[in-house]
Image (tube, rainbow, N blue to C red; front, side, top):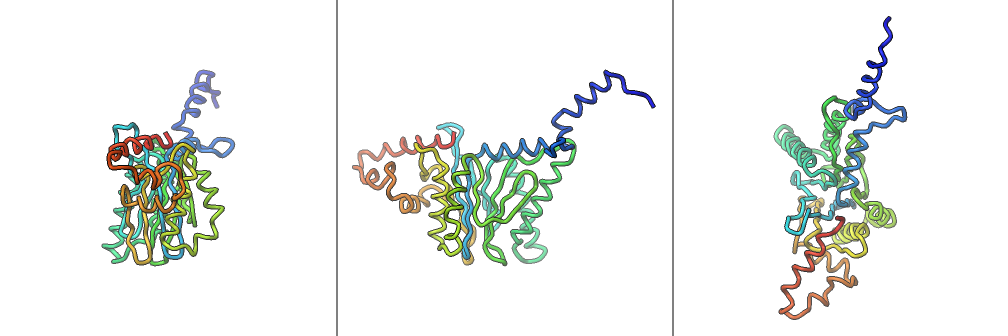
Length: 283
């Protein structure tokens, strides 16, 4: 046998340290760096929250905009009539996965004449994502998903991670500053199972609000909701559709309360300016 030259050994060492090669091999500590990089993308996304009860599943999300002149990013995507998803991370990756889920959902209806089970669709997404963690020339999806809805087995909430792991949850929060939202969810966990539709929505909004900086608040501009129930298709609510929920959930907040809303009509043009200030959430 021939001994590799020092030059060859140096080249081989450099190759094995390249991120694309590390994508295929674990480190001595068992870490796969490309998966960890993808998980960091999830942590940089704005926070999303999901909760389920006996009768309903709710998704809530904080939307971001790149600058004051741009529109807000879409954070909740309806997939089929009975479920949808909320994303944290790369929106382009979420679009690819949501399109895959829509195709699989349509295939189930055409082939079997029934809506796909949420456990089945999340399993298929997980298999697709896991393949990217072990094939050369591919990268893991840089997005985390909360998939929520109601199927033949009842309301469900699943968390999807870039590594290909999925797990069913009672309540969950992912994205930037989501730890504070999860703390609220853990504190109120016992209340969720028996909550009504309205109570569940309020819990989701409160958990979302916990993740915001103290000088920010939820508004009709930066908040999205998705709701599904035993007798209700998955429906997304945005803009003025959620104004009443925000008012009843945060009745005592100092900024943006009913007192401001009761100002003379001449002050009405100033309202868009206040909404513009809320665009800085999580920036």
